[in-house]
Length: 327
Image (cartoon, rainbow, N blue to C red):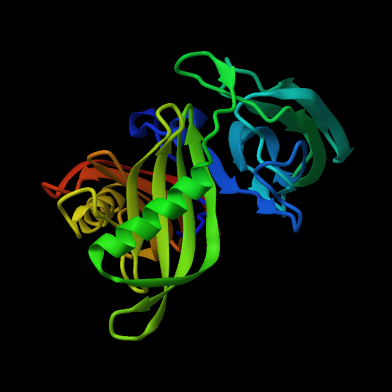
């Protein structure tokens, strides 16, 4: 699944992204060479450009920049050696490194704010200013179950469970034989006890061709189960074998509705959706996130968009977008 610089979801989306709220810009931080989900000594160096006043929120390994006043900021190479875990955090430290304005830690990660840190940057001078700050913490290896409120680390390895489910599904579907792992599976989002894992594997198909298959799993740590397993061959979108469908029109409906909105909001028909959007299934809902740009009045305007719909009935529930920058 590709990563998007301009990603957002409204509270109506559900899932971990909903905790970020509306507006602003969300992006994935880079992973350092020694990055690990299980690392006990976490460290992130956040590098951003800010014009006026912005809240910078770190949740897991994603950052949201929310404008308080002025323009939304932009990333300049932020990186982490571990995710900010959903619990078990201690000795959380903030250190400002450089920047011409004021940088303050507003909130430390805790259960009430969904285990996020929030730093406010106030830049009163003309134009953009570059800022760098560091966040460090210790993790005790435990996670917090937001549904039951209990601490603990069950004897359940979601990465292994995802891999095993993919191997079993591949065998059941008679699609080929697993020959090796490319990316064994890493967590891409988490909300409470539920998380999404993605990976890639080399598979020799029944025709003898060697293919790389991308797969994703929805894992529930509460009941220690893999709720769904999706995979795709090169050139295909993800499809869920636990659902009785292999393709849908949700994406085309989403983009058509957005074209109609852009025509009304910006009086333009020149809209470009860039690359392949992220698509995944959450229960009976297909969710889509992507980005693109449009031309209006001589300006090129970048935007992020998200949609949700029912792939079984090919109905679009909603769509939304957020403009990000003007050139």
